[in-house]
Image 1 (cartoon, rainbow, N blue to C red):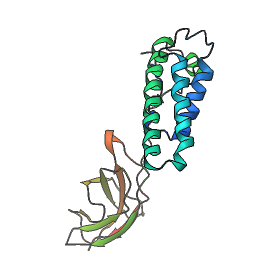
Image 2: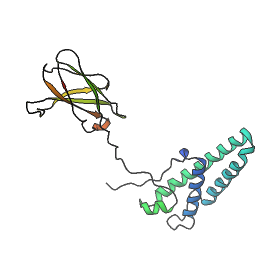
Image 3: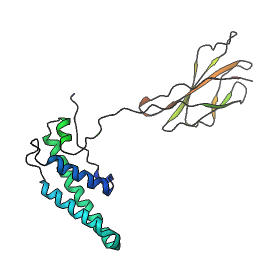
Image 4: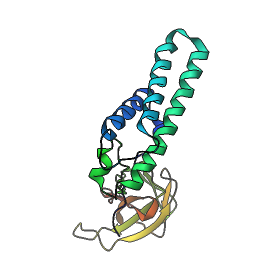
Length: 210
C-alpha cells in the first residue's frame, strides 16, 4: 500500500511564537506556488488573521485580562484558518511529499516505530518458603509485566535448560516456585510491554535454593 502523506495540523499545541512562524512560512511557501493555484481560504485571509494576532500580542503586556482574552481569540482564529488551508494542501498535493512541504506546512510523521523496552536488572534474590526463591526486579517504564525464567546450574557451572517462571505485574516481589533445595539456579527477567514487545533478558543472577 502506498504511503499516505498528511499535513501536520496540531496547531493548538503550538506556542504563539510557533504559530506565528508557521503562518509566515505558509504565506511565503504558497505565494505564487503553481501547485496550489487557488488556495482555500485564500492567503489574504491568512495574512489578515496573522496581522490581527500580532497586533493582539503587541497589546497584551499593557492591556490586562481583556487583552489576554483578545490575544487568545485571535490565536484560535488563526488556528482555524490554518487548519482549513492545511486540508486544502493535503487534498491538492497529489500525495507528493515535496509538493506538500513546498506549501510551508510540515508533514505529519509516518513513523510507527516503537521504542524498545530497556532490559531490567535483578535487584535481589532471597529464599522464601522451601522450593521457593523471591526475586526483586528493577522497574521498567511502559512495562505491563515481567517474565522470569530459571535454570539449574550444572556440575561444570553451566546453566541447564531454562524454565519459565511465569508473568508478574509486581516487580518488587516475584516468587519462583517448584525449585529443588540445595540446587543453585541462574535467574533472568525481562520486561513485557504492549503489542508483544519484550526487552532483552537481564544479566543472570545465581542463588541457591534452601
